[in-house]
Length: 271
Figure (cartoon, rainbow, N blue to C red):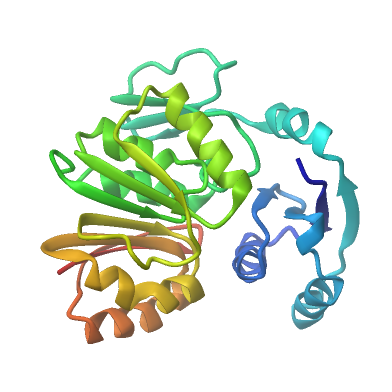
């Protein structure tokens, strides 16, 4: 396992934290920890470019500190701060060392590693909430940017016939596979890829990534969506909505629903 770099921004403003998360995610940062007093961002040591962080910090006039996190210490660090996440009375996300969560429809048990998708971030929470209203029974599903694999697992638990889960990151692929096995899922195929090309035809597309990746891949995603299918997009700030909606409209995607939490949005489109 690789070492990681931890960048800490002493920023208490939640809106500024979200902006920094969005900018850093576009630059390859893979994990974030938000508190009332600061934001911690994590990236593999090999992918860390100091000048990128310096430029972002300068734009928003925020200081930062840098620390190396040894690979062998990462799981203990993450587990020590990981708490169950409950999305309404629909889904509970917890680790194996937590007690079962009562009064929810479904539980998903994950190994809390660095990949996106623990449910703590507003975008994962919004995606899960929106997925409650979708009919997955017998459907082919594409989870683009699967992270922990949580959305793919939920799709299978909701009755999907086949789920293709894609991510570009080795750490995420490993974690998604571990979580797939832990949740006894047999209809999920996990593939390493950095674009939505060759995904085949799908009934439901899930993409919780970021604005730039979504825009770069939106035409590929739309071309793989069956007529009458739906596309659920997040990893987006409220300020991203206009650009995403304009690009979607050019591809005959119709906005069906929008939900928002802590300055982040989740958009549901039909085709």
